[in-house]
Image: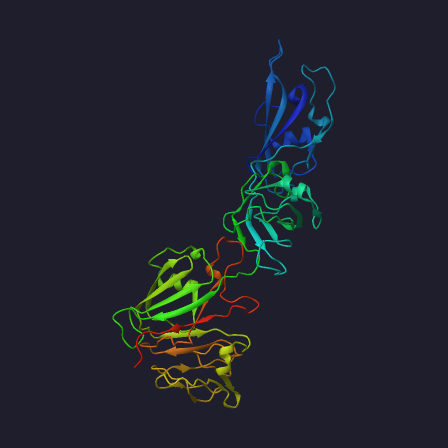
Length: 472
């Protein structure tokens, strides 16, 4: 639908002409410019052919009623747009009636109509939103944004003007009825925002991933500048969400199936239970890989070198440890804002050491961890006990150097190095939260993807409980 080489413009006359006595075919640009003046440039080169011709008795050359201009080089073109080009017939072209009995004709023709090919305009993204985060449901004030792949003519609507449902329905047809009432507003040439003004609990909801819309030719939506036909394409499926997710992790329980031992080891399991049925994040029911699990969850401590997952139901995922040891490498701990979670009562920042230490009275934890420190963070032993000796090297942005396994400090991102081997995820310390990028949603899918923790802090990350064997 773009104006380019190969496009044609047909100039039609009300009667047969003498063709200006030019050739019937292959009329060059220089001769065309003698016949016509265009209100916009057609480009740097074009040719013409006379069609719809007839031969009058006794004449050796035909008379023709239509002239087709073919663009051979569109460089420098206006371009000519729908209802945006006029052709002026010039006397210098010597175009007369046929057989010739009148003087050379001249005059201005109508505005150009038609198009230069099918539309390439479509809704690239269809995004649901609850702009003011008012609720966790489809309701008044929610929006659906139509984001187009190209600038459009806005279907001849004004920008920033609110249009009623009737006008919106001239442009789009939804895959299912959207709502009893809504409005539409163009924010620019590439985005139309539909605002829900009335809802009906008896109507089918616009589900994320399945709800779509179709552009109607009656809406006269075209590219801009306008060169294409009206668009009648089907949109991408609805994405986004109509409010905060109510999906969260209810529990993450470690267990040790037979034969039992007294440590975290191969074959141990972690069962993650969600608050509601989920879409399973599009994952298979069985043999979910370590990479897929890592894309779904953030684990506060590494689970080992390899593990697999299986959905027990729509709301329960079981992780099986394949290799409980972990390779040497660096691991990142994420910064957390505030220390308002109940478990933070166990946390104390020792700022006079320029270091951060987690105080835990648990007598079940073994041995010790070494904080080797940096110039900004003098060495100090942490009371946290763990089998492996870890080095918290800190960064210039993380002067307090929190213990790397502790995630509730008011600091930047720190990294710790591990020599590999056996670093078990600790009960009541290892957090498990959902990554929003995983697109895990409750079903039916109406709300935003779950993050495991919402913006109100109502659903904090879950911490590993249960046990990986019998107590020594």
